[in-house]
Image (cartoon, rainbow, N blue to C red; front, side):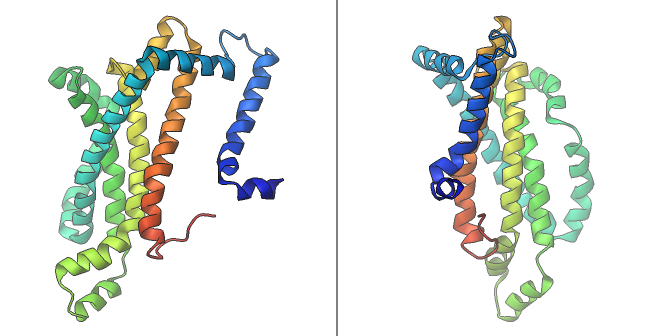
Length: 260
């Protein structure tokens, strides 16, 4: 049975969730908790269909994904080159590292009060929070990836007459790429959670806002639905974007063994 499941990618992925859903439904049917406070899978599925039919959920999902895409793209565009820079130049590393540690210790949510004064309830506020959250894991891992490349590899490329650009593109970037991908995974994960927190606190739309707004009517169903959507959306981003990028680069180049 287990071998058959392992050979089927769909069952291999959905198996744990089907088991969890079955346990969830069983707990609901046994009425361990009042159904008003702990709805079942069918209740959540019906709420999903209702919100989609009304057009509320598609709009909220689009808003959340747009905010994440804009903020994450800005964080990556700034974080990766900056991490490579401080990893390549010891003087830059010594100068910027204390500043990075200082600002990284200030949580993204701590910026919200002053951001509301500066920008109000706008996309700029949301974007700043996401960029601020994404950029530090990306910088840390990019710099670490550069600093862990053996010096002999760079010297070997120099001895073969490689230009600085070729060394950067053919040696440094591939060598640092496993760490950069790790930074992207961590940064996007943190950015996703920061977005939901920001939507809960200051949002007027989005999945986080939907969950927090449901408290007014005591709709536990919408809260649980929001939690499920958060997990599904992140799984889609990871499986549809990050894993293919990993396979197309670091696994293809032999820098990392594929997961089994």
